[in-house]
Image 1 (cartoon, rainbow, N blue to C red):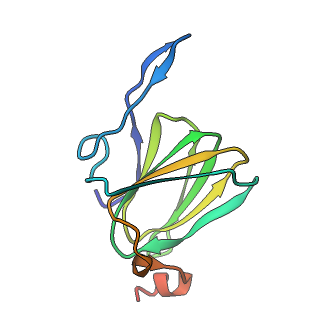
Image 2 (image 1 turned 180 degrees about the horizontal axis):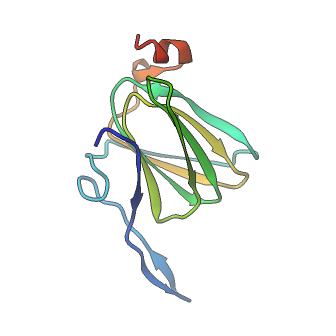
Image 3 (image 1 turned 90 degrees about the horizontal axis):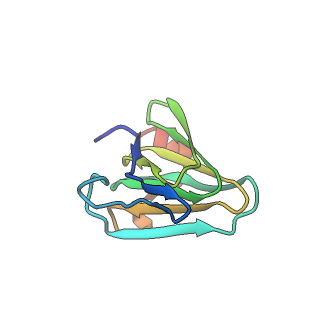
Amino acid sequence: MNIPGLIDFPVFGAGPDGSLSFAEAEGLIPFPIKRVYWIYGAAENTIRGDHAHKAGMQVLLALGGKVEVELTDRQGKRSGYRLEKPDTGLFVPCHYWRKVIMDENSILVSFASESYDSQNYITDYETFINGV
């Protein structure tokens, strides 16, 4: 998978006992998971991300609240996604600039194919667009 896209996770139950969804590496998530992190407690309209990765993939999932994700490829083409259901994730391949706008009280979890390495980040948009 080299293009972004939504992933629908299974949902079991829907009654008063609640629902259950799950994610599995190399099944629903199209890569082995090396890192999981979550962002929470952000104020309304907080911007996170604002970078690209040189290597690695992610699946982003809003466990609570609403999260807007804007992705830009190296040709400058933008696509927008709204994550607001805990059973729908967004696959983000490497080489996409991501801008994440958090809603107040939202919770965003990321399943990542790579461990954290500051050298894997492109934090300058012009450098990203120019393919450096």
